[in-house]
Image 1 (tube, rainbow, N blue to C red):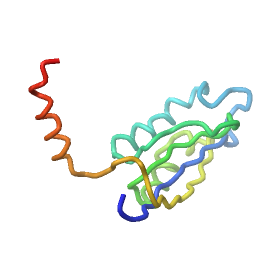
Image 2: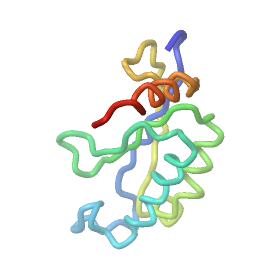
Image 3: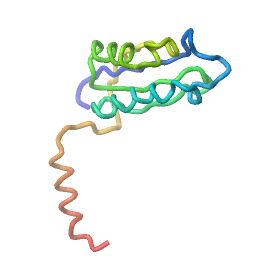
Length: 122
């Protein structure tokens, strides 16, 4: 990464319609919420989802590349768990100044690497 980049953390916590006796990942509405992760992944925005350590009531995906406006719509209106009051979401901007991940959009180098491996008899 050559310049600081704005990523977002979508922190999800139980909403007013969530059953506190049922863990988030076991709730009947959770598969609908997982569709948010699929949508973010298909758009190329999802970095990683997962729970916060020590807080079973808070889960979040880390995303990059989406505008705040896109994320607000996807995270509040398109996510049926949030729209239905089972989850609440806080969208937290995060300025990333350096990353060990290579998010370059130059796939040409990857294709060249694959061509070099074509001669590998393994």
